[in-house]
Amino acid sequence: MAGKFFFIDTTRCTACRGCQIACKQYKKHDASKTKQYGTYQNPPDLDGNTFRLVRFSEHPAKVNSMAWYFFTEACRHCLKPACKKKADQIMKDAIIVHDKLGTVLFTKKTKELEKSFKAIKQACPWSIPTWSKKEKQMVKCNMCYDRVEAGLLPACVKACPSGALNFGDEAEMKKLATDHLAAAKKKFGGKGELLDFEDVRALYLITDEQSKYRPVA
Ligand code: SF4
Ligand code: SF4
Ligand code: SF4
Image (cartoon, rainbow, N blue to C red; front, side, top):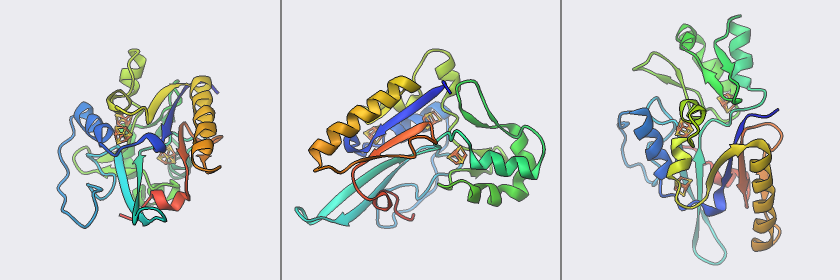
């Protein structure tokens, strides 16, 4: 399989949003117009200017009155991407492609799929694709492939101060993920899982029910 992988240890995330801002800064994205709607999560969802978003959600806890759940969300760079499958069904052309790093890339040809955008977004299990009004095409995280090809880390990973976001070769990331899973299980009374381990290039470690990490925005 080879290629590059992310490993995200949510137990280490402090929700500083350094990753979210570093992505915005590197991509030279404008701020998204937003408003306070009762949560620290802002903007409300991924958009044409926001390829990585730190999700915040609160739930009742036994020890303290509330528990925070933080989840830095971006494209998982699936090994068999449903977005690409849908695009291929709609138009027989290389609209969404896999590059040599394993990155799932939305090409400029996605401009031709504006009418089918909704169907492609719905095909993604995490509703990641967004439509950029500025670029008039589908957009999302591209794994900072230009930085990675130059031997650098993705901007979001480089900015993470806590070790929550990691990036590297498959064997290294899968070992790190399984080591962190074992440590998390010891610390959190046997709780812990790696989400979609065989299917994606963004391996998330969580220690509670998955639904608690992704509030409806
Ligand atoms: S996470 Fe969604 S947008 Fe990203 S590659 Fe997978 S199906 Fe496509
Ligand atoms: S890899 Fe690059 S494009 Fe993707 S979320 Fe991180 S900074 Fe943004
Ligand atoms: S930079 Fe790291 S610690 Fe900060 S929100 Fe992103 S993943 Fe969490």
